Image (cartoon, rainbow, N blue to C red):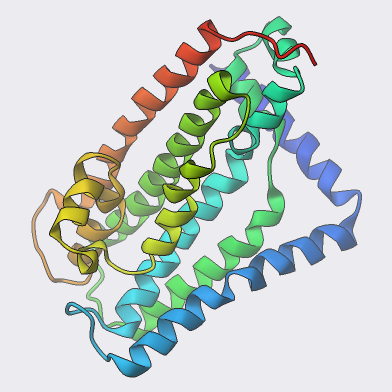
Length: 262
């Protein structure tokens, strides 16, 4: 395992050096990533100009929520980009080379692409999070700080699992399935607001089927002081179970892989 981490760091270093060969292009792309999601914040602000409170949540509460989800999504995009663009690897027959190398294929896909420019979206998420923390009168203690870190960690793992599911399906379709954007980009858009505003059935689905609520709604209401309980800080870690079926689907696809012949 130690050798695997060392190899992954080597992959990341190669990707970063490659990106830094064209610094102007990198910084412009990063700026574009930052500005491309500004509309998300504007949409939230404009809505709260008309409705001061939505389901008991204020503008500052929602900005805090939106910043956390943005950080989760951007971190997963940054380090799991190889799975997000996996359809191209399969379609071009490049996965044959992955299988021939004496290294774990999942590790190779993780290291195939590291999207450093997504740091632009990450910066926006950090700024929104910082704004929300400053504006909301939260009595921070160790458990609430732990909850915040667990939300970011668990959410990143959840979005990574969805990228792996999308990659696993590519073994059977040779193309990326656009409906998966409902669960990735769609989840980021819906995650701007606490999930209970969409209704109880939607909240139940996001708790049981794809556990978005475990990394967003439930720990958020604990941080905001709307709920209390020793289990809330650790709910985001339960989302890690989603990685098990995601990796199982990918492994199943590997066993049934047939080269595209490209």
